[in-house]
Length: 48
Image (cartoon, rainbow, N blue to C red):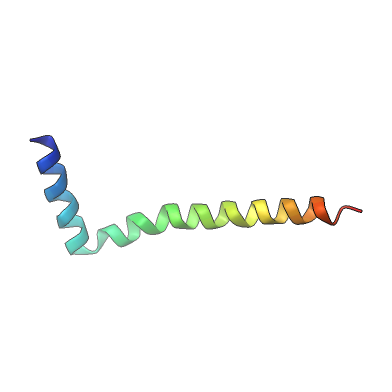
């Protein structure tokens, strides 16, 4: 029953466009983390 309710809420969020902003937040975090890791790796590789 809870799963069905969750599914309905999820569909409502998708329909209203709220899901886009919900998905954008983790995507921004992942992108930021990727940039930090890339910078650190670059610093280590070019340390010489």
